Image: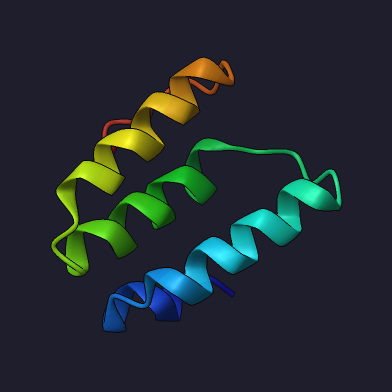
Length: 67
């Protein structure tokens, strides 16, 4: 659901979906975080991308090569 946001750099929708997933207790995995990072970089918000990467590490999610 979040991948189309990356095409448009739609950070607002991507983060709303992320927050909804967190609220519902969805297991956070590297693919979800990677998609958020892609959305941020497409929007040219590199600080947000770095922040998501740090959140991923803080939650104990092991980055993939794409991260």
